[in-house]
Image (cartoon, rainbow, N blue to C red):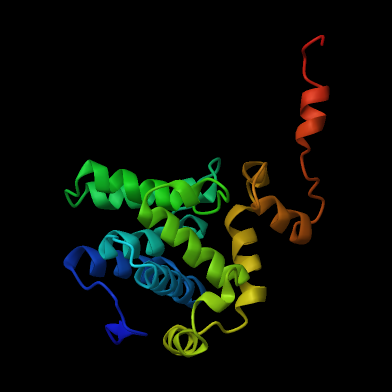
Length: 212
């Protein structure tokens, strides 16, 4: 794999390489390619806006952001984002990474689908959210040039991504659909999980055990 794509250098420190090897071991090509595209699009946003960010931490956050969907890291009772964040924390702790950096990566991974919140967190978390939104739903699509997009997709192909990513999401939490309550992941269950009934917050309020 080339180390420079669309003028973005993929981190190659020992820590970054080990994180990449972990993802490669446990994820399929779909999540591998998606996670790398997320990093590249995130870094492009940072560079184009002349933002200061830690490329290594942004890369590791991107690699771990969907790891909670994989069989090795998915829990029985937590949101998949939290599973990925916990995996990232364990990985970084085992390698002596400072607590502040660990917290930053944990937040970036755990909050990457928390639209309206994560954009206001640390730069790396906000940038990764941009990369996720860019790759998954094409948010702010024209912000990045067609030439740069093409270079990224040539290096990390999409290959029916629109269809396959939704099924990858479902596979990661179909055994615990209750964890999608109040999140965009409930949309996936509503579309693809037979018998799923989307919980309604207003119903919970009106039918709480309180008298009034």
